[in-house]
Image: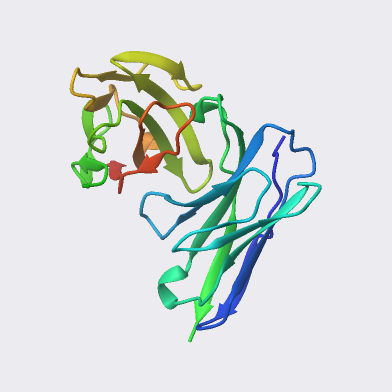
Length: 112
Length: 113
C-alpha cells in the first residue's frame, strides 16, 4: 500500500507560489519526508527532505505539520521550468532506497 | 562536482539481443542503485550496489543483472531483450546508500524493436 497520498495534478501560474500537499497519515516517528521531482524524460531530482522541523533550501521549503501526518512543499516563485512530476516519499534513514515506492506523484503544470 | 552520468543516453536494440548500460556515480559516492521506469509501472527498483556488493535486489527476472567496480562505476546488463524491456533506465548514487540522499542520473532510454 502507498504510504503517501498526493493529488494527481495541479496548475500554478508563473511567478506565484506553488503549494504541493502530501498526506502521510501512517508515518512513523523515525521516517523522513523526501521530495523529488522529475521533468519529462529526465532523472528524478532531489529537492528537499525533513523529519519534523520545517526546512528550506535554495529550491523550496518543506512544511511538516506538528502531528507529521501531512506536509507541503512550497515553490516560492514558480517558473515554467518547474513543470514536472513531484514525488513525496517517506523513508526511514536506515532503509534501503530499494524498499521505497515513488508512487504516481503530482503533475504540476506552471502556466504563463 | 559532476553529477551522475549514464551512457549511452539512447539505445535501440532488437528482441533477443543483449544490452549493457553504464553508470558513473558522483565522485566519492559508493552506492549505486538502478531503476526501470515505464509509463505503466512507474519507477521500479532493480538493484543496489555498495562497495562492489549487491545489497538489495528488486523483483525482476534473472535476465537483469548488474555489477559494480572498485571505482564505484556500475553496469547493468539485460540479456535476451523483450519488447517490454523498453524503458528509461535510471541510475542513482549516494555516499553510503542507506542514510544518505540519492542523486539520479539522466537515464538511458532503451527501445526494443
